Amino acid sequence: MSKRPLSAEQLAELRTLDALSDKEIDTSDIPEIGDDRWRLARKGNLRKPAK
Image 1 (cartoon, one colour):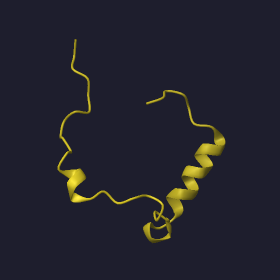
Image 2 (image 1 turned 45 degrees about the vertical axis):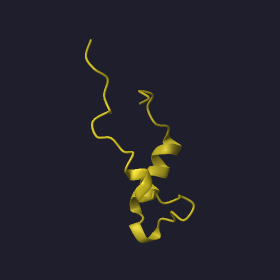
Image 3 (image 1 turned 120 degrees about the vertical axis):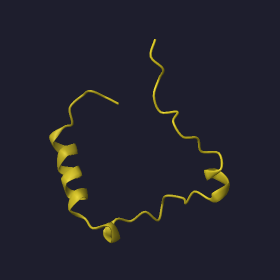
Image 4 (image 1 turned 30 degrees about the vertical axis):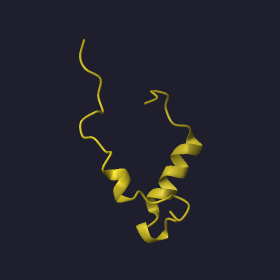
């Protein structure tokens, strides 16, 4: 993740999105992930090992 602070414009956009209900957010352009893709999912690969 970037440690750069968010701009005022980005913060305003996040506040606007936060005010929307789930039903108001249009996700029609995001493809659904089918069961065949979930079979490839692996749990616990999100952090780097300690050196």
